[in-house]
Length: 61
Image 1 (cartoon, rainbow, N blue to C red):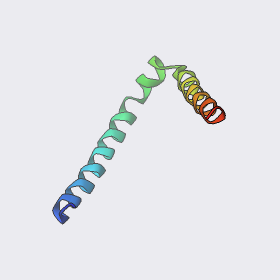
Image 2: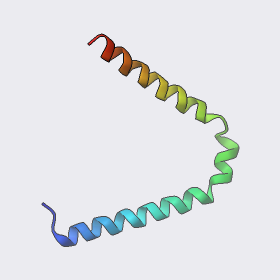
Image 3: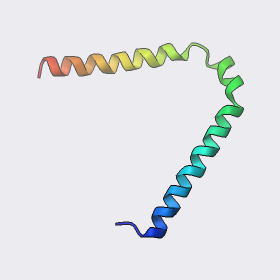
């Protein structure tokens, strides 16, 4: 499916991408804490809503 060179490139690209994204996140962490305070509740509500939809689907299926 993929050649050895393509697999090596893909793995190295993923590692480099993850390292760069991690570094940038750590660099912007103070800004995130200041401007996105309280957004965890939006995430919890969204996950709860999706869980509720899945529960209703399995109950009435």
